[in-house]
Length: 472
Image 1: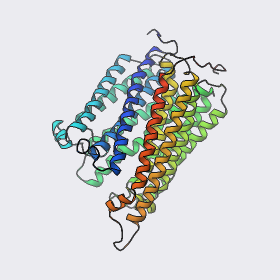
Image 2: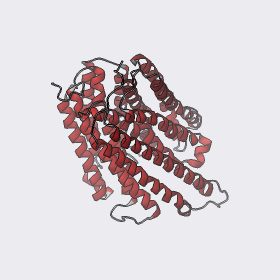
Image 3: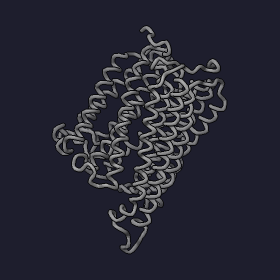
Image 4: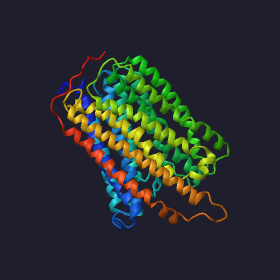
């Protein structure tokens, strides 16, 4: 295949661009429905019955998962050909899968919005293989089957590219994470009648994604970008990557036990879950050390300072969200009081944004100038706008997290700690938290402004920034 874009090493890397563009479109939708939900927290009948809260929440979380998956797929299509030092096995298959996945995603979201959920289940034949109705896994069974087909085609395409080309630690770690992602999703088809067993399998999808195999994908993407923007020897970065993924797998797999505390599992999980989940911040802390160490040792001054900002920012924010805020309520004696409160929402928002949204935006920030034919980086004005978007989104998400944390502490104080029947009811407690929810909504508006800055930076072209030193 001839190279039509001189800024790409291989022409087939161009298939990553529609994946990145569509991922960002879905990201906009996710934030829009997040704002709708934020307003519904304080104005309960806002958009009711057009968009009830349960539907808005379902759309919000499903868009999050799908846009992150599109981002991962685009990252693999950009990253793997360079690591394998050959063209993608089948760009045509990649584009077919893109349209299949995009169509399935759009139709599913429209189904949530315009068809009552029970009617959607009946319409899609859920009674033949019941899989619907569980948080994050609300997709109709036929959509889940489509996801499996797309995943198999995607893994085949990436796998054949690797088999025929160079094998590197980065590509092997990414492939391991992607295979794990696909395998763990198969447990979404297991829906036992026993509630405790159901929760076991449910957490094997949800936890072992976000606190297991997704961390491998994140680590490989971070390592790839750091090699490109720092010029540090590959061997040094790969040694760090081995350490990080070992810690992520050990703590992530056994740390699943912190979800078994209250679902009818044996009491031994109170200890196992507490001990190993308390160790889960370690790989994220290692990523912070890794990123800053590599930047300090850089052998080139890469012109894409926005990508460098995202790379450093994702490690710090992921450590705070997934590490520190996860640890705050992961020990069983603490989780007894905090489970299911706004503290959980605080942890979830900062962890997802810091670990996965930001790493996808890191790779998009690095790759998009090349995909658009600009060069190594956009002009200074575009990068300044992008960095403004970075700070607005990140500070806003930190504010959202702090406000939800404060709301969670007050919720525990009013609803969980009082004894002898003195606990406040759930609805009265929510009324007491209204000020936090109003402020959270304001922070959400500023997050949306930051996202607009990030997106608008891609419209800027101008004079291309030039590297001060050639890559090592």
